[in-house]
Length: 358
Image: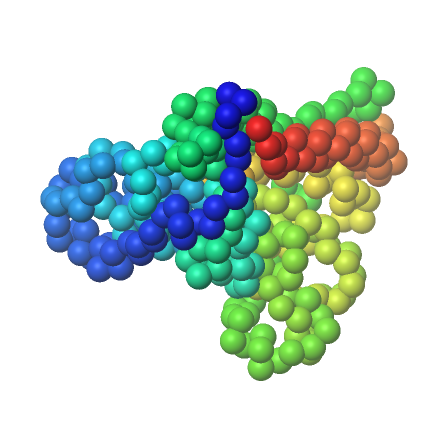
């Protein structure tokens, strides 16, 4: 082991790169259905299956653009490589794919070009220097690559387990109730009117640029900013497409597009934070569509019909009116719990994203 050393070698000296076949479109695949997988930019399953294959040996590949850009993956069996993916062909049989899969993953992610569509190209990664174990005579040491790959494998399994915990934690909700309150089950449509946003495309927004945010399915940042507004005040808003059912409380002057609903209260004694914490888990449970994986690629929907079926527990006073003070007190407890939850999530994400050199 003492005669083995690590040398940094440019990626282009280790591998050749070959782009996937862009002719393998969905239309082509539908016309040539078979049993051989076609892998494209998605890393979850295969894009399609056709009646021919281009490769029958393991290859190291990486996605070139899209949400999964920079993801490194070994493909095995008989298969095809379509668009949005490239192949790394080793220049020596002594280069172990499993070792380079782990070593290259953080490097490619760090070299991503983050525009409207994240991407990574051969031209911006080929000169990147990769640590490779070599013998005294300069040949690649396969056994050391295997040892390191096994260690990376153990680490990756721990990361996967942490990712599972994180996903469960992300989708977990708490239910706070207290014997100090009287509760009444109330249909959501007795508390609120629903309003869907206007048609407001990116092109339309570009023609009306201004300072007022346009909120769409994204709960983190606006779609655009325009020179007019539809609402001015504090409102409960929820996404109806994308990550459906996520509630955001919007304030100030803003616009919502067709991907969002507003909940307009029918009475005054309703605490918006209480509604957010109690209604969101119900809506997330009732969403329809593609659930996604690892917090990505979700595309779910909600409708007025689904909202009409929602019932929540509302604290009430002895005279039957809604107890606003109790709502506020319970919402504060929710806020404290979710603050702790978010802190734990952040720590798990930090551990998962930490790069460890072996």
